[in-house]
Image (cartoon, rainbow, N blue to C red; front, side):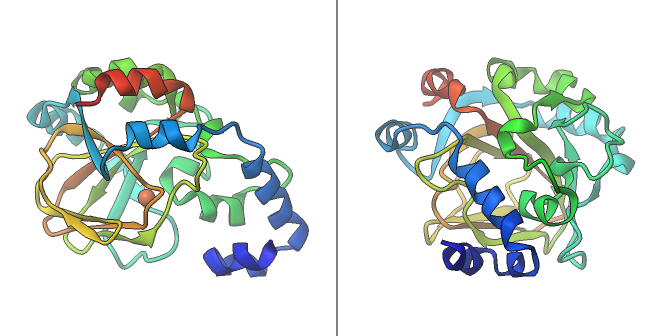
Amino acid sequence: MLEIIYKIWPQFRELPEEKVIRWYKTYDNQTTIDNEKYFALHTSSLVPTSMIVDVELFHDQIEKYRNQFSQWGINHVNFPRYGIPLTNLTGSLKEENDPSRMPLDEHFMYHQDKHIITDNDVRIHTEICNLSSLDPINPIKPYLIRSSILRWDTMGHFKPHIDVGLPAPNLRLWGTTNPNMCLKIGGKIIRDFEPGRIYIIDTSKIHEGWATDDNVYQFFIGCSIESYDTLINLSQ
Ligand SMILES: [Fe+2]
């Protein structure tokens, strides 16, 4: 089992085995959604919802927080990737070692010891969540787990990865304010998305993304599996 984990996260070899095993057990103990239900929701890699953020209003409102975005994690700092939390562990934008400002595997490596956290543990809304431009996502706000707003400039990207192993312990949504970005999911490049629209994204498939312009904001939203019926109703 450890060898499989090290294949996906080779950096975990640096950690005590006991910590890696505890991490695996914590993840494995989460309640999950049946694959049949998962695929009934994820009928394609990117399923549009009826939730649409007004991009102009969002840009106006997020501008005030420009200096409160921080570099996304400590790896690949040569790429312009910044984030600000929609949810974290305290609700403060000044939270130390905020898991919503870095990859969660990095948070696990450097900032978790006794207590292992999963996306489902990161639920306290920050003031960013209350921006009126985000009112369109009100139906899913009760279910929000670890979620952030990302801002990428040209060359900002995520390398190929998966976020959820099936059966899925959480559900993921995504959207962008700028059409000048690319997503590749399950080997297929996807360009036909509408700025501002929130999509249900299948992150159980290998996916990557990159920005071809500056100031590309992305809605990087996690929901607990209790959001399932709501998401079915919002999907189009
Ligand atoms: Fe991802």
